[in-house]
Length: 188
Length: 424
Image (cartoon, rainbow over all chains, first blue to last red; front, side):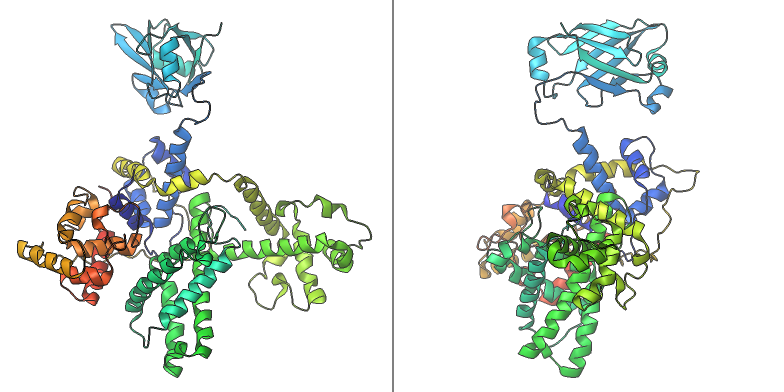
């Protein structure tokens, strides 16, 4: 998607004569702002805006991240499993949801009194979604320690619901087991 | 040579340089005296854009300018547009031009003077391409780079190719090969067979090649000339080696070029602007010091800020009727202004910022910054005869103002756009 105004805005941002312009912010700083892990300070934003070259680096990194997030085009109907991580920022609050890195699965945590209800949901935009909705295979969510968090057959909405079976709260539990989880089809 | 982010460093550059030179000579034939540098730049940009598009379909213009799929004409056009982003290169050219003009008048109008003009044009674009590519490199890699460093990469690449040529013919160049290896070579050296790319070329070979070049060719090697340009490099084998390997590694990676990714990049303005606006909106007041990179070797100047905006009254009904009669006189559709206005994105940041600027001036802004033809332009903006935006002359007539006033208002509008914070 592009319009002449977006292109012109881009041109105005990036193609300005700023004598002595140089890279003003490190990649780590730009990436953390893009990922949402550490926002820019007001001063850093001002520096970014005043430096077309740093903005071009920002653009490059933003597009790279977006491309990396895109599913691979080849063999897109195949799915052998997806992985996700507990974000550092998420651990400080009650955990509401976790998504796999490829964005194809979300694990929702719905509080029910003292307990939690778990809902695994398939993103209908996933390249293999049509096949999974048709075949409705059994899927399994495991934590970083390999313990089964949820297992069951996908329903026609691409969801699978179970109650939380561990003594500690979801955020704490995932934190304890490597802050990771995976979703995979149950083979056999 | 291919290097991350760069566009103007491959063989096609020779043709780009020639096309820019040829078109420049052509447009200067219509120039009998000099104006102020910024007025001259406006004139040059417009005349060159016409001359280059006339060449786009000819053999030289259509030839490949690099391995990313840019033609010679496209690269020439994009470098021309860089000239207005980096006007200091134009200003340096104008100073050289004015110096000769003061002595000899419009020297470029006679055959003998054309060569002198061509050389000045060559110098301007040759230095500009290294500036543009050093910026491209920095954006692509996140590592600092100067135009000088790009020049050094290219020198090393050329040196490697010369060494490879000498090695390929090693039987006939035994003495020179011996000098490069620093030992007597009697049989086919194993290194010759092992050197498959620039990444395998050793820094010492380049240094000894340069050192001995005067002996074998009569001209000193680039590391050993009287000029101080590469003086520090000849004692720095480590730096040379790292640069050789970097060129080799990038060439290996880019041999499987993903043209689609490259071209996709051009169309993603909307995507990254979204990220930019989000990051800008998330910025916070912070207690800790800003994490700003320290400057490298090069000095930095204060960023420029634009002067105050210039406002203009919106067009009245009467003016619109007048514009319609002018459109008819220009063989544009009668309701050109009305239809072109309706085709604008009224809600965009550009439209809001330029709300007090007339439509012809606005279109001149697009024309100056994106070129007369861009596939993002709505049909309603184009002159049906040329499938391009109306020319500056036509736009001036549409607005009922002179061409210099049109240029001034257009430039003021660009300044206005550059002065407003872009975080909405």
